[in-house]
Length: 113
Image (cartoon, rainbow, N blue to C red; front, side):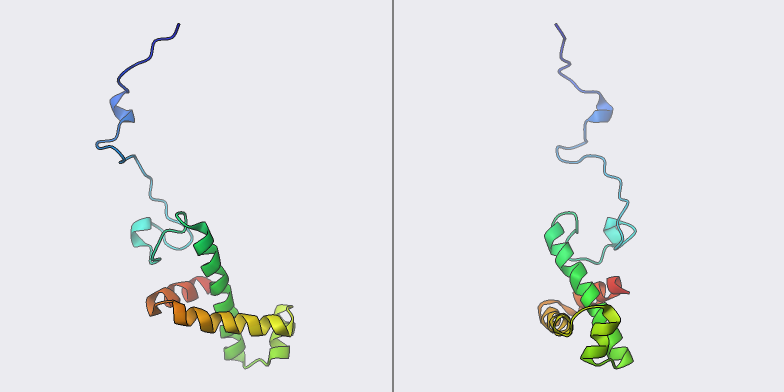
């Protein structure tokens, strides 16, 4: 029969319950979690983050369309999508600008770069 240690070694116990060792390696958004500009952690809500990564991609496409003065047909050809999808991208960008705070919009626009 195996004996069970009632007390774990001191290096296995956190100073307080719920405080474990955490290596802050960051992600592609910021080098460390403490420097992250996102309003919430991408690892806490992956669905939220995926949505806003798509918005970042849409911002990038809309920026290129605006900078180069592309028509809908030219943009569709440039990005290998349908003209209807170009309209959807532009619509999602307009909607996102209404939903996001200016600082959040700047963060996701920066991710698109």
